[in-house]
Image 1 (tube, rainbow, N blue to C red):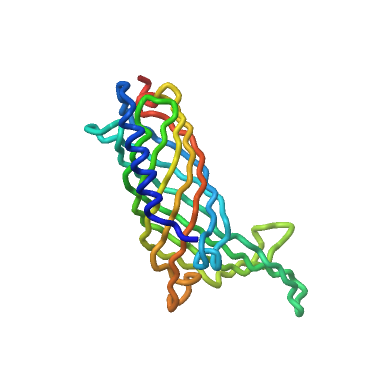
Image 2: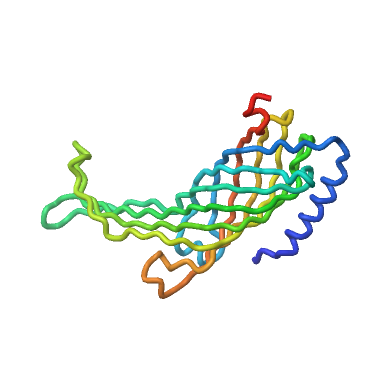
Length: 228
């Protein structure tokens, strides 16, 4: 199954018509919000090198004054833990327990645009496109733990690397607007990354991972934060 760009075009057109049909006085206060994320690998490139993971993010929505009930600029940052595992073995010579800890994280800084979701209505559907600068961080540590005093553990880093790549996302969501002050926001986001080194290793093989994000959060308008 492939994600078809035409689906985005149809939803984008529907939201544009729906927003334009709302003739009530528009509201353009803008908002800032925080949200939780569940990210699911999609396709071989992502499933082979990452697991479903949880994360969080923060974003700002700034309506364009000339089109404040239709269009807005968006900027945000988010973090997701893609892999966190520990494998324990017993050293045959010393009989000490040795743990191998592996961690992989994903951070995105994104900017883009959004249509819909900026008027006075209670139900505010929206869709958007963002470009992003993305960081994949991957580390492996070998640890000889001390179960009585963690400060006495012996830790050696075998691999610690991070790479920045470019990517983009397509977002479809629904905003529940409470008196132009508080908003509950949820939706689905398709995330695509470009040319990521396989397992962040030597870089001889490049992968192009894709993900689906399910997000849910809460936002506050700038007017409410300013006490107006």
